[in-house]
Image (cartoon, rainbow, N blue to C red):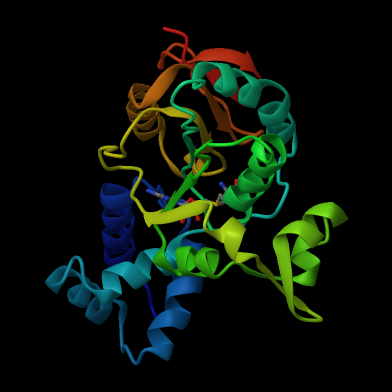
Length: 269
Ligand SMILES: C[S@@+](CC[C@H](N)C(=O)[O-])C[C@H]1O[C@@H](n2cnc3c(N)ncnc32)[C@H](O)[C@@H]1O
């Protein structure tokens, strides 16, 4: 199936306009992933598919397009330095800061299939486990409904949880088959999954103490990135922390976040 320049440009501008994702250099990715999808779903051409999306911008095909085009690679304990820092530095700060409300507000802002927010929930369980009255529910969002569905189910293959400490495996997983494990219901309840487009206004209640915005800004251009960082900044507590991917960085002159150490920033004013 032929992807013409016109069709390619339409897809690039549609995905950029709606989701901030820059696919202008990703022609092979677009045709590789979409061609399969179109063939499986009986389309004769990209134009036919594009027409369907134009007719119904919030319909099934528009949703499926972003499900197919997003890159959702993630894994348990990814960039473990953030979880160590969370335990050693961020949680003690939150414990003091939220001593009266006992409301811990952590957001995994590109949660993908759930490995990141569930790792956060496990660290929280270790830290607040024996203390009474703390609300430690984690907010986990992503644009892709496909990955969110997987995340809510919380089922993972044995090899996917291999890097977790045995203690966590015993505490937080049920064995479904010798090859498949599921996050226990108790822990699944600790993570609240929602579809959210990072290009939209943030309307979640309350200000965040800690935001994980890891390995998603790589798909955005500088302007989109800086505008998103500003919106997140406005929804954080003073003293709150932001974690970005360890290969990502923030333009210090373009956002008010204070640099703490590589990939860790803080709202200080
Ligand atoms: C590579 S994964 C990162 C997962 C996890 N944060 C990590 O570091 O392992 C990037 C995720 O960002 C999501 N994403 C991309 N653009 C988005 C947008 N505009 N709004 C919300 N999520 C988006 C994708 O669907 C994907 O699941």
